[in-house]
Structures are given as structure tokens and as C-alpha cells.
Length: 378
Image (cartoon, rainbow, N blue to C red; front, side):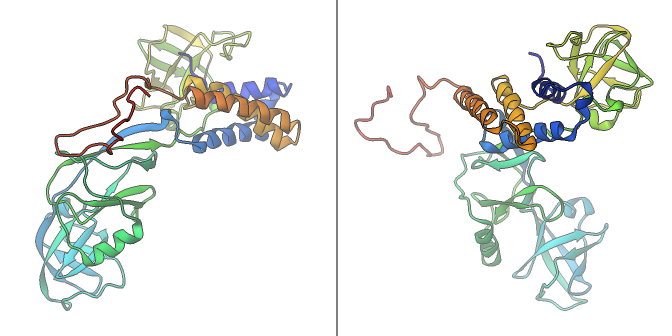
């Protein structure tokens, strides 16, 4: 299946608005493509956005510490064991680890009243309740642990904070919530209390779409020529960048730049770019490309949507361009809504007929009870 790319959307908007090649540089066209893409990503959880992920829990570490002051202490365990932890329990006080500084010292979150005085020795339990979620995470379903379907329960971040203050529950099942990662950007899965063994936890989540960066109209996305041999792409006068990993490279001819399939100079071949090392003059294609020498090319980002959503991406971009230009908005909106409805109707990946209405599990879990006269044929 051919890719729909950022380049194709821009070229479509140029044609739809009766523009010329110079319009590829117009900000309103590129803005319309970005706004439509963002809106489609957020308008609902599409089947295309469902993904599976796994985290591995970490066993707690008990060790001796020496209190330096109200916020720092020296620990005796190995740095590799402590550096991944998120909390420490000293006596009956639970503290967040703000930072593990080096091989022997760590800093607590501020405004902590420790049960021991500076200079004193204490026994502490380091544990991890915060587990990083995928960088493209949006929202998730109930997790499932390694040995049984999850019997913990979702709690709000506020409830999780209050439970952590007064409840030292350990082991499984665990309550869970999702919060912003306090140490970096993104989100984390927070377990309440804390795991006492190493095991895997699986979950289904909805991912964000791949962002758009390269339209293929930038000079560095098409400068020079390329030669291809066995998937290796070697450039002459090119300016490949690391941010092109996962983008699409399209090959033209020695005379012509590769255009969309609907153009008079359609591309000869295309492939995603592998996430391997990229230099300014070399990259690796993820898919087979025909051998070629000294041909023109362009690099553009794929539109991270399935084929049944391609039309709504194009008509939605037209609507956003009309809205930005305050031109023929209502007509474009009606076409956009028509394609959006068709995309939603086509967003079905599994047959409805023949589905089981109950799910049983050997751990004792089952789907809710149904009425005695329930018709399983419906």
C-alpha cells in the first residue's frame, strides 16, 4: 500500500486551492495540514491508535542510610539498584526521591519531616511505584499482571496520594493511577502500594499519532541526488538529518523530482527510513528499493493514519484551509463531515458476528452476568 504523506497533503491543498508550486511554502497550507491531523488524532480513539505495552516491576531494596540533613542522606546499597527507585520509606515516613545524585547520596523531595535526626543511622526501604509509560501514550485500559487478570482498581491521583500517606500495602494486587512523570516529560503508571517482586504488567493503551516535521518541500529534504544499492541509500550533496528516521524517502529520476502518484512525474519507488544511524550522506531504507544511481529524491513524513482515513485527512485539511482563509467554509465543512462519518463507519477491525458474550479466566474473573433469556445471536 502506498503511503499518504505530508507532501501529498500539501500538494493536494495546492491543487484544491488552485495554487502554483510556490504555494508549497505558504504557512496557511502547512498549518491547515497540521490542524486537521491534530484534530483527527484527538476526535476519538481510533482503532489505529490501540497498542500494547509492558512494564517490568522492580523489587524493593532494604539498606542502611545515614541522614545528612533534612533533604539528603547517604545510602549503602549499589547505585544501579537505587537510581531507578521513586520512593523511600524511613520509619513510617514515605518520601519521594527527588534525585539520586551519585553512587552514595540522594535527595528527598522538599518539606519532609524525617523521624530521625541529622547524623543518625536508619533502615530504609527503597521502592519503585512510578513506571514510565510509552512516549506516545494518551490513555490506557486496566493493566493485567503476570499470573492473573488484574484485580486491583483504578484510583484518582488524589486518592493515590492519600492512600500512599497512610497505607503501606505491598505486593499484588495493587491500586493504580496515571500521573505526569515528576522527573521528566510524559506520563507514568503509579502503583499503590509497591511491588515486592519482579514481574511483567501488560496493558492496552491509545497512542498519539506520529508527529509531522518534514513536508518534502524543504531544501534539505531534496537537495543533491542519491544512489541505492541493496537498501543502502548514499547521497551526493545531501543533508540527511537524524529527525528523518521513520520518514519516507521517495525516488524520482535523474531528470525529475518524485511527485505524487497523481502528478505527471510520479515517484518511481518509496520506502520508510530505518531508525538506524543516519549521516548527512547515508541512510538505510526499511523496504526494498530498486537499484539506482544519481536520481532525485525527496523525504517526507508519513501521515500516521490507516487507508480508510486518507480521504478524511484530505477533506479535513481543505476545511481547515478554508477556515484559515475565511473562504467557502460551510461547503468544505460538509464534505469533511461526510468523510469523517465514513471513516468512523469503516473503523472496524474485527467481525461482530460470532463474538462470545462472556469471557472467563481461570483466576475466577468473568464478564458481568447476563439475563437468563439473553439472545446470544444478537
